Amino acid sequence: MSFGYRSDLLERYPNVVGGVILARDLRNGPTPESLREAYLAEQQQTIQRIGKTPLSQLPSLAAWRSALRGFGVEPTQYRCAAEALLRRLTKKGDIPSINTLVDIGNLVSIRYALPVAVFDTQALTGKVTVHFADGSERYTLLGSDEPEHPEVGEVVFSDESGLVVARRWCWRQSEPSAAQESTTNAIITIEAHHQDSHTDITRALDDLQTLLHAYAGGSYTAAILGAYHPSIANTAHEEQ
Image (cartoon, rainbow, N blue to C red; front, side, top):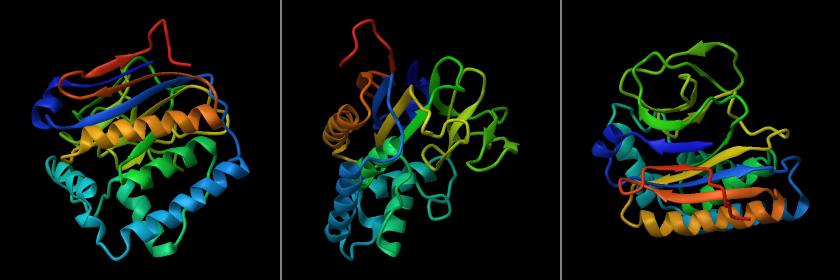
């Protein structure tokens, strides 16, 4: 497994910070009760912390809105994954449990108001990169089997075969990359553009690894990426 940012994307977005975990031998499945309780508690704490503050005024989400506009996306039409989660939480009062890996990702996402993605690597070929689409890439929406193509210039995550695993940067994952109960190997990302990105990503990456160790096991290679360090690959000596 490997993951990285292309140079032309980093030229336009030099301040992006990405926390990435390459995870192997995970145990996914129904969310255990102790994790479910922690997730519900985090949801209530997040509601209290946000209060009546408009989501658009949270620095991390405001920065994501600006990033989306940078490649022609209207962020109130295609909200970043973290804003979509928080919008549901503040309007509905809760976020449903899906499975262990998804709930861990969502817990950390609402804690930091940053998009977290868990990509099952089973269907992927070679390195996953974040880049501007040329329009030839293939994407299948969650819950669908009809392929579509991203717009030229749209930021996507795709593998070396052109299979898109996320459209509009952090708007939505693809059907083949969604974390299922059978998922054992995954690429996990959390990204930011705001002023305190490095501090928040460092803390969020630590939280993700702590939760993964406790509830999903496995082994990990982790790094913080950006213009200074654009990619990560599995190494011979992984964190345990």
